[in-house]
Each structure stands twice: as C-alpha cells, then as structure tokens.
Image (tube, rainbow, N blue to C red):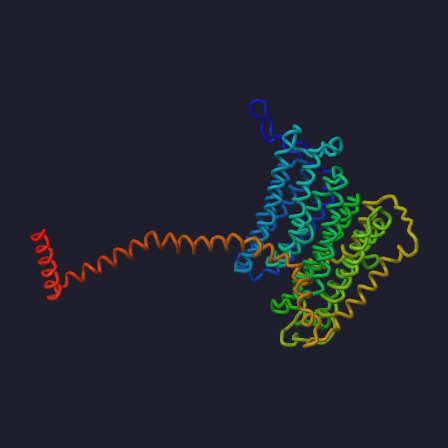
Amino acid sequence: MDWNIITLNGSSVIMTFLFDWMSMLFMGFVFIISSLVILYSDDYMSGDLNINRFIMLVLMFVVSMMFLIISPNVISILLGWDGLGLVSYLLVIYYQNVSSYGAGMLTVLSNRIGDVALLMVIAWMINFGSWSFIYYLDFLFSSLEMELISFLVVLAAMTSSAQIPFSSWLPAAMAAPTPVSALVHSSTLVTAGVYLLIRFSPSFGYWLNVFLLLVSGLTMFMAGLGANYEYDLSSIIALSTLSQLGLMIMTISVGLPSLAFFHLLTHALFKALLFMCAGGVIHSMRDSQDIRYMGGMSVYMPFTSSCLMVSNFALCGMPFLAGFYSKDFILEMFSMSYVNMFGFFMLFVSTGLTVCYSFRLFYFALCGDFNFVSSYSVVETSYNMVFGMIGLLVMSIFGGSALMWLICPTPSVICLPYYLSFLTLFVVFIGGWFGYEVSGFMFGDGLFSVRYFGYSSFVGSMWFMPFFSTYGVTFLPLGVGYSATSVFDSGWMEYFGGQGLYWIFFNFGSVNQWFQYNNLKLFLMFFVMWVVILFFIIVY
C-alpha cells in the first residue's frame, strides 16, 4: 500500500506499507502481547508516580516496532529501528540509578553500530533507484552490491539480536522494569534483527550463511552454558532469550526462514509469560532476584508457579506446548539438511543445555526446601497481573498448534533414521537429568564453581564479553588520556610552563625580599664590594 505524503513540483514523497501474511501475523502477536503486558504493568508498576509516562514509553516502543514490521522501505525501517533504540534506552534507565545508566549506555551504544550499518545500506541502495529492498532481493541475488548490503544487514541484525560479539548488552538491559523485559525479549527489540534477516534471507550468499551459522551457533552455546552458572532469575531468562535468538538465526542460515519466523512467534508467547511469572515472584520476594533465596515457591504461589512451569516446559520443547511445534520441527529439519558437524553439534548440545538450566531453575525456585521465603510475606500476584498471565498461558498451550495450521497448511514429510528421530528426545532427557543433578549440588567449600573458579568465571561471565564491551573499550583511551595528563599537563608542560615560571619568579622575589630587610651586614658587604671595585678602577 502506497501512501503519498506530499507532492511538491512533481516530486512525491511516498511511504510504502507491506501487508503480507508475515507482517500481519507478527503485528497481531506484538499487539496481543503488548496489550497483556500493559495490563500487567497496571498492577506491577502501581507504586510508580509516573506510571502514565511509563505506559506512553511502552506504546512508543510498540509503534516503533510497527514501523519496522510493515515497511519494505529501508528509510522507514531505520525510523522504526532508531525509535526502538531510543525508547529502549529511556526504558532501561527508567529506575534512574548508576547501574541503570551504565546498562542503558551499553545498550544504546551497541545498537548504534546497527544504525550505522543501516545508514550504509541506505547509501548503497541509492544506486538501485529505490529504497524498497523488497523489489531487489531476487534479481540482484549474485551481485556484489547486494552481497555488501546483505552483510551490512547481517551486522545490524547481530547488534539488535545480541549475537557474539555484541551479546553483553542483553543481560545488562535487565535493569529495565520487568514488564519492559517481557516486551523486549519476546516480540520487539531483540526480534527486530531476526525479522530483518528473515526479510533479507533470499539475498544471502553461501559464505554469509556459513558466517551466520558459526556466530549464531556459538551464541546459542555460550548463552546455554552461561545460564547454568547464573543465580539471578532475570539473567537466566535473558540468557535463554539469547539462546533462542541463536536458534532462530541458525535456522535462517540453513535456508529455513519461515521456520525461524514460526519459532519467533511461539517463543514470543512463552517468553513473555516467563518474564511475567518472574516479575510476580520478584515482586513477592520484595525485589530479591537470587534463586538461592527461593525454594518451595509452588506452595506459596501456586498459580504463578504453574504458569512458570508451563512456559518453562514450552521453552524446553515439551510435546504439545507452543515451543514443541517449532523447536522439534527445526531440529528434525536441521537433521535432514546438509549441515556440517559443528552446526549439528552446537544445535543439539545447546538444546540439551536449555533443558538443563530450565530444570535447574525449576528445582531451585519452585521445589526443595524453604530457604529465606518464610521471612517474606509471599502472596499470590494481584488481579491484573494474573489476568495478563492467563491470556499468555492459554496462548502458550494452544498457540503452537494453531500456528502450525496457519504457517504449514500442508504437512511436511520428514524422513530420518531412528537414531536421529530419537536424538531430540535423548538430548532433552539427558539435559533434564543433568539439570536435576546440578541443582542438587551442596553449597560449601566443595562447591564446583569455587574449586574451578577460573573455568566458572569464564563460562558464567559470557566468555568475558561484558568486560570487553566495557573495560575493553574504555581502558586504552582512558590509559592514553591519563598518560597524556600525567606527562604533559602535570609533567613537562607544567615544569617548563606555568608552574616553572611561577617558581622562578617566586625564588627571585624571595631573594629580592631578603635584600629589602636592610640588614647592617648587607650594607657593610655592599660597601666593601664597592670599595674593592673602585680600587680596581683606580689602579687600572
């Protein structure tokens, strides 16, 4: 649909909207999830004096995402992309403390790299005569320009979807209020990059797909491994989002963009529910997020715990929940595709790790002994929060099968040998058992992460990526600045400049002052000196 905004002297400014099955379906999901999140926020943020400002920011977030979804034009995509970046910064720093400011700056600066890449795409597409990329994907498939544009789009998507090496901003963005995290991690900011990749996927060449497979496989593995070493409830769920984004991009890289879109939608449902449940638990625990302080939450909060388990099982790919239809489909299609051993290994091991940290979370938070719960007055969440969670609970159970009927009207025939068919189930069971074993580890001197501290700090800190993104970027410029200050401003320049002149004049002044004291010996010394001089003058 073309909308002629203005015509001036024969030149028209036209905005194009693309309403196909993909954009309409995605828009519907974003609207449903955002409406339930706003309903949830009404109770969750009830103590906030500026709740109207918060709701307006969330709505601006959703509008920016709409621009990105329905535009086949790179200019209007940049408009939505920048809107997402700016509003996400405002929401991350919403609580206005030092750690929020740091996290917000890391988020916004990571996403600026993607903005620069999109601006370069706009500059290159001037050569084609139009900024509507949708017309050029097929017939410019093998051209060098399209390969460059595709690479820039991949770079932009990697920053938005937090792939290696831009992963560190995603757990940092958890500084935002929980309803924002539910929206960001399910259907808006992080999925924008995946959606862009799905749209541009027909133009990706062989090497770009191999590059994407490598990066997304490593991201998925890194996030799955890191989540098993994490004790912060929100960070575990944030790392699970990172893992699922890796899975989606991996699916795109092997030439299955519609399946990636399918998983994008099902993931949006159960991930929003997962964050809402986590928000309810954190709310009841008086803002404590450490899962070691929880335990036995299913007794105190039965409904929230039930929702948490449904969304957790959907994340693991439990049969006939939303995540099963997309995840199992992807794993089986992957097994049938021509994929190298590295990609295959990364995918299945990461799937096992997903089940592992989900079961670990389940045992730590919902089962086991009461830890510090008795010191809190833990109560079930309030009406609006429950209502928002019920809407997503129903969709997390039935959404997968409904989307399967919509997206795959004809059944796909998958022919696999027995060992590959059962590999998915085997990996899931092994992951669940390992998660159970990990959660049974005793705390004390013999703790694994204490005995092997180097390994656990490497794995638990996302392979040191947050340090590279913060200290790594600032260390060299700050070091050079310090050296320049100490050597020039406080060193030689100071010695030969202002301070040096000051000391010279000060010393001369003190000598002059000494002369002014009119000492008798001084007069006698000068008298003798002048007599000697006169004597020499007379003699010569």
